[in-house]
Length: 406
Ligand SMILES: Cc1cc2nc3c(=O)[nH]c(=O)nc-3n(C[C@H](O)[C@H](O)[C@H](O)COP(=O)(O)O)c2cc1C
Image 1 (tube, rainbow, N blue to C red):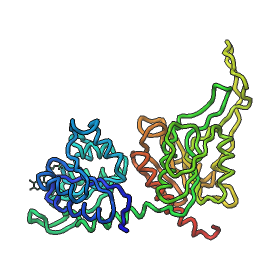
Image 2 (image 1 turned 90 degrees about the vertical axis):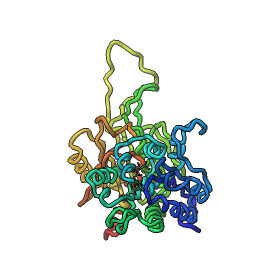
Image 3 (image 1 turned 135 degrees about the vertical axis):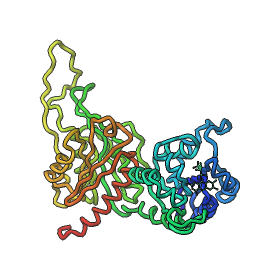
Image 4 (image 1 turned 180 degrees about the horizontal axis):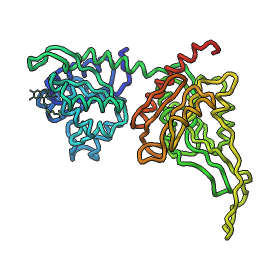
């Protein structure tokens, strides 16, 4: 069997001399049993004809953004959703610049912007173009956004010069993809319990106290863990999100229900990831009937809810326990304090209340702390961050398992 069965790879071909090598890359990917769809820029078609890719992949090649014949003219969204990953090979200096600024003026650049799957870029250009300050800066920004660079290599170039900027050979790109995809199974054989979303603390049958958590981050974390090969249970507060495929979802409403759902199930799990925004307080006496509006504002007596994270981390046979901290200020100090006070193995902190990222957004920026280490990831989609987080948790978990008392 090939290395990439069922993998849906969108191959973007831009207008560099190395476009001819993309045909060999497409052939190799197909021989590894990937489903390959090719999207070409206008310039790329001056180097190689779409027919070559159509014949090699068995699929039509997409080239036009504004195609009135295309069903609903939404090819950029359809292809972006179809793909498991996007590989741009060759990626010209011009296309890299477009990606950096988010310019969407053709099909390939528009779908790169619309995609929230891993983006892999194989640059190919003259050595001076590669080392120009503009390209160096563009590459730095793409890297920071989590885009994976494949190469470039060093050697003789089509222009007769020598240096860095050559596109990696198709076989080398396939080898790198293989290594990256096998990292996808970082959690094979592990069982992971994730919590997500807000909780609702009732006041009466129609009113409740809650928070702004959308559950998006926790759902992406559960999805990424399942993609990583783990068996995943997701204890979810009330959210408006589709259930992740291959994940057991337990729906709860209150902090107390979440506590019980977690404590009943957590034994035997290898990893616990508490991404839910559990209410800190619940109402002491909830009214069974709707409270009538009156001229006097009611006084609500609140009580502390039970701390799920601290209880999980405090179990005699606790799983590797990861907490989330949403902070409006003093992010690092508060996160570290929570890490130590609750005896967590890792804490994932994010700033909330700002203009970007946080609770309801599709994007986030994360600062992650553990005993003796930390890492920061800039603003990116929650899906991308969840994939990186699961890889990091798997790495830390395997080190944690070697500790003497485990
Ligand atoms: C013969 C020829 C070869 C080229 N090779 C490259 C190349 O290897 N890398 C590159 O970045 N640009 C190269 N260019 C310039 C690009 O084709 C040009 O920047 C184009 O606008 C890129 O369009 P695209 O990125 O939308 O495909 C080449 C141009 C010509 C005429």
